[in-house]
Length: 519
Image (tube, rainbow, N blue to C red; front, side, top):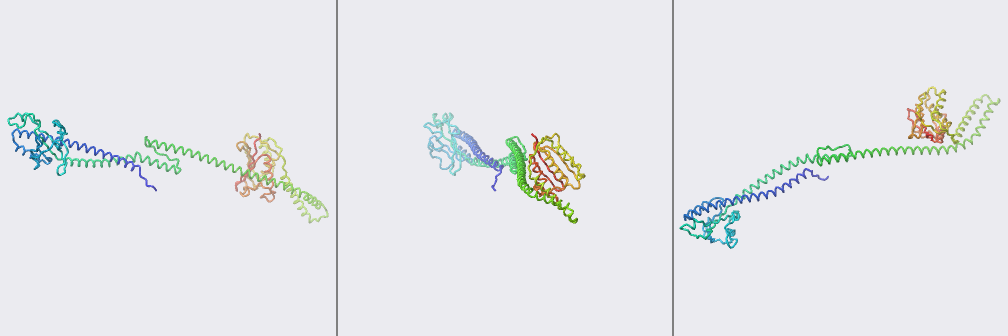
């Protein structure tokens, strides 16, 4: 199983990474701005100190108090932020320095202290405070701010009686101050640490907020879509996604619901088509089976008819002779009276054989039907009227249910009457102790056929016998020949009809005869 990284984790990680990069860039910008502000502040402080020292130097020079000036500058250099103070004359000679051994040394024009004014042949006396400051490193390697301020020749100097400098001299000397930037470095470090801590807290807070918002606004709708997709893949097309927003995810949920609804509709249509196709295939299969059964029976009847005709002709003449001589012997007075019952038995059995031969001849004879256009109910009424007067049907209730306004059929009335009489007789044999015989007519086969159903309330036919009841010589009666239903089958087929049988043990049997509508 593949390891899955959740959408919240991906989104939170990506957002945090973007914020981290953004905060890093912002930290560098803020640190540079902070350092610039602090350096500007240090330059301002250095300029103030330079102004104080310059004014003190002016006062000391006016009084010619070099000792007081040295003490004053010495006290200033004791400040923890002051690294270095020195006075330089116009020729570059250091006249005062708080660093021992530096007093009396000469500084060239290309030194850092002088280059900002002597970058050309004539010195610039109008440089800004920013231009006169520089970042230097002390002998101990610490960072410091160097600030240079020129001491100008004022009228009070060259107009005094003790003046040392001439009127045309503009700069009397140079004051160079070095202020430590260690406090700036510590402040920058503290500021950076505070900014990093603030960044971490902001990242944590933003990560939590992004996680919560992503969970409710993105993860929950996406999880609903995932669960819905799983249900649909499992076949649950009734599942729907709750639409909880009007944004893109809400539109996606609605699209999923529409897709599922279309799939459900298509699935129902496919199932309906499949059921309809299956039903049609089953109906067609049953129809093919019925046609095959009819063809098999027709072939069997045709072959048996030919055989029966030959057998009937071959045994008919001997039977006639036997019956004739048996009748003569019975009438002969020389016959022993004790043999008279035996002769009567011979005559009755011979007559029975003659009846079977007669049935065989009728079975084998394919007489062409003389068709007429007639109402099926008229034929059935004649059959019912005939059996109403039969003693064997005294305990049987005959109920007629005819359809209204049924079309007529084109058949041979005599042959069809014989078929229904045979079916009614069989129904009466199935109800020896009485019962209900229902005769109904209706339209079937999409109105192309008229059906007549003969239903009895007898014991029914076993399932294993249903496929054989139309076979010649098949009978379950002790005195039957098994040709009645076979002859009826052939008659119905010759008249363009069909016959079917339905039966259940204990519920009775129904014979359904179909005839095509005339015209």
